[in-house]
Image (cartoon, rainbow, N blue to C red; front, side, top):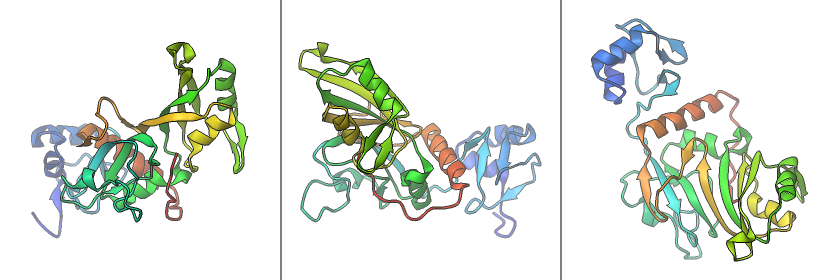
Length: 262
C-alpha cells in the first residue's frame, strides 16, 4: 500500500467483498462506482478507505471492518441498557460474544420485544436514533378489544395526544377478536421517536396494548430471528443501513439523540 496515494479502488472493493478485483474493475469502467458521490471510471484511481465514502449501484459499501452491526430480537423483561442501576436484566448478555463494545441504537422499553440494533458505529447510531431523521419503524401490537376499520382510519388520520397530534404512516388490522381471546392484532408504521408512542396511540383510541413487538427498523426486518437471539447483519443489510445513514447525514446534524421508548 502506498500510504501517500492511498489504495487502488478495485483492491478496496475486492477487500470489502463486493466482487473479485477483475469484476470490480469492470464495475468501475461501467461507471457503477462512486467515491464521495462522484462517479469514478479510471482504473488507476486511489482512495483512502478510512476517509472516502464508496458506493456501488447506489448502495453504500462498508470499508471500515472495525465497525460491527448486530441485530437483536430483544425479549420482554430486558431493559435497553448495558448496565441497569436497578439491577434488571440488561443487554450485556447479548453483546458478550463480540469483542467490540456495542451500544443499542434507540430503545425498546422493558415490556416491548423485537428488533434492536447494536453497533459501535457512533455516527450511524446518531442518524438512526434521532427523531428528526424520521427512520421508519414497524410494530405489531396485540391490543384489548375488537379493532374496527374505523379505528384504523382514525390512527392514520391522526389523533391528539398530550404532547401534540400524531398520525401513523400506515396502519392495518392483522387479526380481530375472532381469535377468541377478545384481542386484536394491529400493525403500525411510524417514523416518530416520541416516548411510548404506540402504547399511547392505542390507549387513546380505546384499545390498550397488551403485547408489543418491533418487526422493522429502517431497512432491517426481524424475519425469523428467534426471541433472545442476536446475529450480525448481512452484507446486503449493512449496505442498506449505511446507504440510509449517509443519505440522511447529508442534512445538517441535529443535537445528540434522545432515547426512544415505544
